[in-house]
Length: 365
Image (cartoon, rainbow, N blue to C red; front, side, top):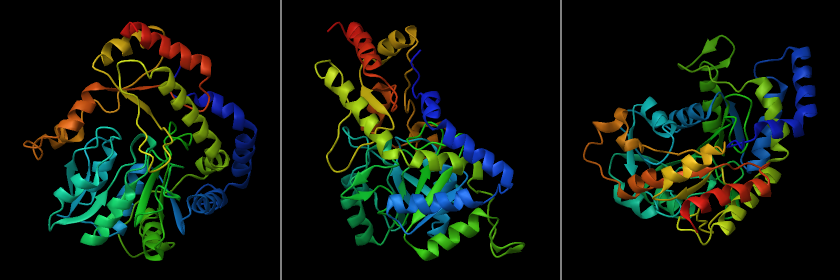
């Protein structure tokens, strides 16, 4: 069997370091906002090139708290993509704001500055680009639009840890950004976890307060907050993986480039790199009108594959009423034809050849 992500192989590589760190944590009994969380926050901030990194309970919480800290609230419009995981829009709805879904670039699957500009209204207060599947959005143009219209820029980096654009990390450009450490992510924990990053002292202070029941000093509460703290044991795991993130991302790029090279002559569309930033391939996502046939053939050989995302957000039941008249043709076409192949730092070249041979057989090329 070939899984989408081989977490067991990754664990074997870091097993000794992780188990030693977990044992020390249990021995010390410092479980909540302990020394590993504090060290991870400093190490992540240094790696990402930002002033502040604050650990929270999930990527969804990271986006939610970032929006609150940046003053986005009831009735505000936030422009974002409909081709993303629902957490992007959930975070916007949590604060009472309105997600304004726009169409995507047919090659990168990210929102384009042209589409954003057309969607801006007097109610627009923020733009939330998603660096989908690990490819950074066009942040130069998006940042210019934010500055021109005095909008907040909240980056959804839940799939792009380690991706760079114009020499900066994704997440280091906006007013605040959210990352996810779901186990399958490029930098993944052994459970849920998230991170908010910002260069603003004020935003960082608000996030720290919000994640800890609205409290700066124990038992003194200034606002209604949340219980959203990165777990100390997850921080142990993340610290071990952070040391290796560039190595992991480079291995993912090798897998992706070999896939694309081997399938260059096939009648399907392989992932496109726009050259604006470093794609870190959280997913390797193709387009094919024969998606179902290909997936069935792979699954018959116990090779994992998946569709991210089969139903775009504007067509989900939860948004159907408010988006009843919204047509996003590129998003809808991509959702109907996309599928993703296994990708992780531990996928062998032999496995890649095996996967491509099966696809080639289906397409009879």
